[in-house]
Amino acid sequence: MDGKRLSKSKATGWSDMPHDILLRIFALVSIMDRMLNVSRVCSSWRRACSAAVFSSTLDISEYRKSQDYQQQGWRSQLELIFRRGIHLGGPKLTKLVFDIDFEVEDTHLTYAAERCPNLQELLLHIPVRTTERGLATAFRCWTMLERLDISFFGRPHVNIFSIVGERCPLLTEIKICGCFFNNRIAVLIGRHIPGLKKLSFRCAFVTRDGVQSLLNMMQDLDELYICVRKIDVPFYRHTGPGPAIMCEPRFLRNTSRLSVYHICYTGECGTCPASTMATPLPINF
Image 1 (cartoon, rainbow, N blue to C red):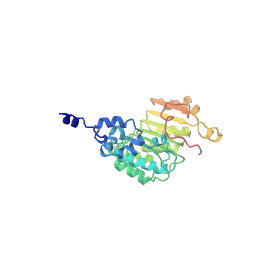
Image 2: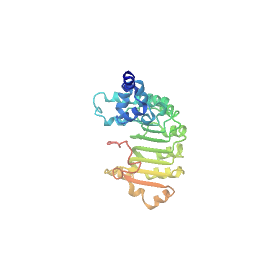
Image 3: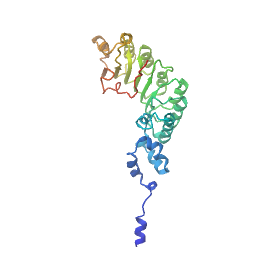
């Protein structure tokens, strides 16, 4: 009798813990520890770390909260986090956020696209190391993409708008962070992605011609958010009209069909999609 009781009360090892219990415990662990340490302990822990509740989002910028950030070897650590997160997420991954310090190349985009074809939301910094061919190859797999955040400092070296317009039919929202938003960029968006419903951009300066072209070409646009940086240099103040000009009555008449038309200065609004974009504006441009 005592032997049977002992057999039934035998302690269960950590690797034999029920799946739902592991999920509760691992929810208390940082995303970095889950990817880099916990998931490598055993197969049952790896399966728990691969659960959709953990692996549907990969935010590489979370590494900034780590004490190891900016320490020796931190760039290789970003690379490891990226590959480990993509491996764990696989088809369950629906949101991918690249860190601004992550030097994205064509190989990274291809690696993510081949393993995570169900991506619905992407935050991408457009570096000079990516090519139009690499972007086209990746977005060919991301046909389910609905939301895109992109940043580029200076003039974009590839026409990403034509690529996503051709390959992402479900795309309805774009957020843009850059030094400027002018008529050239507006025409590219309006020509290649005319069906957008929601557009946000945060820039050092914005031209009224650019916004006007956007409104003329994008008849399906429903929400427009503009966050302009406060500039003390006269050249930029004159080149890019600030919210005061963008809100004059004559201009507002052209935006009356929108359900939301929002203008603000950087740092003075903490609620609109443009001002809350994760990507910081460049200090020098």
